[in-house]
Image 1 (tube, rainbow, N blue to C red):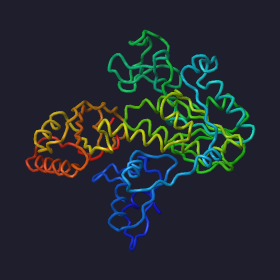
Image 2: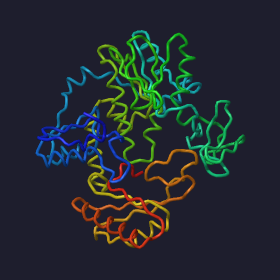
Image 3: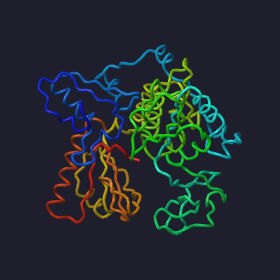
Image 4: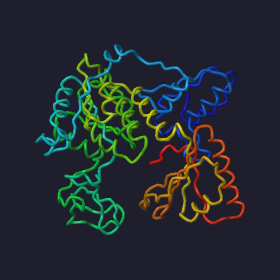
Length: 422
């Protein structure tokens, strides 16, 4: 039993490999050779002819593909069992927020306040916030277009005193208006966990408020009434289960420019909802997101498998991973162009891009494969049909070796089957 590195543990007479929550991005190593724990354990199971078990509250598209191809069999609860153990899920969409006076004055709609109040009468209440911290990024209150600095197009943010400044160049902005609709009204696009804890603490002054996030993750909380504000993945287990849960800013999670945005949002929502008491014991989950969206509907029905199967069918139709094999090549524009000229790609390969990547702000830790702060990089995606992944990998390896042998300028970052393809 171990973390990601346990996938390489030397075990004799291996009988079973098991992985919990394969959709969690911490299972993907960011440094070369960038293995994913699921893929490594699949290889070990095939080579050692042992059992393979994949478990999660949700279901990834890759897991659905294993079942679809007949490589694995599903182990799922019956619908009667799900209905007996799952909480009641209620939704609050944009139409409800527009008609709700309380939601216009504060960030929580009336339904959410009622769920918190009723839940606190019998136990702890979980509040999931998509991000940690305090300083919120701002957006137009009317059309929700991101508020950007007129000088450098960086994101505007609100400090503790309420003043706006740019997150890239630091300039203050006093006269902002939305270039899309002309509105002068702003709203916080995603309010951090610490800010949310302060707001809820003022609304329920007699109830203790606990936070769980990156700096300090709680393992468990007592079963007494309390507000527990947490970022996704850091939710503590409550003794006897939570009486209610609020899943805030769902549109911010679903609106990420990422192929896996819906899958990840559903996975995080279901993981939080699984900590809530069953509906028969009064357990309630309120998600602030548009009810008509597919991930929200899957949460209401508590059907992550059905959502993954439909996602897999759509990706097969559009040629997206995991049905196709894909590689990402990123680096300075001239280096990416030189790499693509050098690579002898398979005839079936399709080149998408290159397109510019966002310029990272200075002062933040650099992620593996990301551009250095202030530098403009480009990224190209290379896609091949099933069965040609090995040929694509061999061509990219040969091109990388050739460029390194002749010392061709800047290096490029090559990632096979990238987790995040935008």
